[in-house]
Image (tube, rainbow, N blue to C red; front, side, top):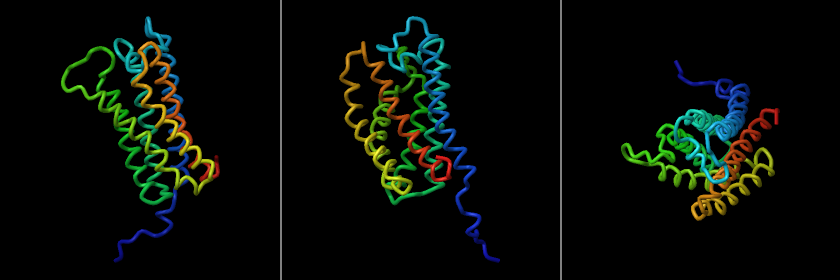
Length: 210
């Protein structure tokens, strides 16, 4: 008896693809909404000066954590989509692994609770997670751009542009005075969410819904 899977069984599943793509977009929206809620709820918070890490410290950290976990799941959704619908060569495969790792990094940022509250319980890895996140965000949009061209040149151009914009913008964050770095961090967050939404829209278009 042959143990083989027929072509019909291994084809793309439009329902699954749409579910993951729409969640990827929803997770970005939920992340933005939770940060906005925390901006108003946390006493004495300055959204221009205070970073999301500062916002996530203290009594209302669960509000920020919900958003962080939602965005982490969005990144994992993109990785699952890319694995389910493989559109490229080794660069696309790098993107699959990279978005998986990126999702785990974002999850750890929330789970470790090493924010702006001088927490030193155990080994503090927040800075290392941030550096890894920054490096991956510079590489991954470019890595996915060649495969994205299969669904339209516009997606490839957007991803390359986002990769370049992040590469130029991210290092500046570490040079800024603390009275404006909160606003700048939100700008970087918009770039990250734009990457996720671009890829989600790419897959939706492929399924005839973009």
